Image (cartoon, rainbow, N blue to C red):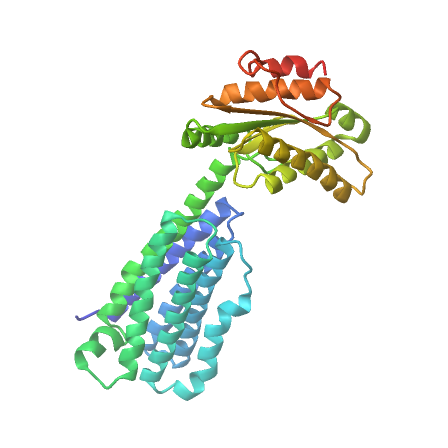
Length: 394
């Protein structure tokens, strides 16, 4: 396949520069996703690399090849660095510049030996592509659709570099050298003209998908306590009840005692600390179960347990909350929690909450800081909205 080196080089430079500009522009619109800045910079380095290497064919001195390939190795490194940043991991810049450093260190020995230079750059490219694939597949905290597609695209690039490395090491085979090992091969054209825009598109898509996930999570997480809010708890609890069918389920409703007095006497910051302490206790003692903050100082949970086990869990929360406050506040701030516990089979969420709410009323009326169950017959008589009425009196 015959290629016009000048047209090919100019097209590749333009693609890289435009792709880098789009990534950097996206970063300017969303400064919280710094991976976009690293990726955008990598594309600009790639554009500079193609321009410098292409200039060698137009009479530029050999140093243009040295500088161009050093920029390309750095571009690979910055793309890997961006993947680490995207996953919320550390971003040591020296890690991204190792490839460029190795290239510059060996340049004096390989400056007149094209095959050796090709093998070295292919090794650098395949290693960084492999690191990117590992980062996106094994280290990613989120399983994004775009990330899976990017692993596939980067895998194709890694395969190309690996084949180029092998061809450079093996005895000459004209067809393979023409396809993979010439300075401006058709394989390189395919890689650059399709790989670069695909890579940029998938980087942008990953950032967009991650932002949408964060937005959805923000709508389901209580911003103060970082546990599920009422909306998320309701959805989780209804799915939980659907899975358990007619099995025994216990509902626990938690309410801090004299919470208004805590805010009045110690300040709202102390009140926030108390709410976070109760949320942390629930997360520790009831992992994997539907629980959340319903609003104010009200929390609720569902567990697949009978009455005895449910009361034990409730007592563990009450004791754990007290111990958590003692550790975090040095014992200076005291707060207690009353818990209503009710066990039933085949009820809907609102009836479970109504039953536990009736039990909570008994805990409040009985002196607070205790776990109580409803009296016989109360579960179906007291409904969820009643909570606001008695809460203001107790």
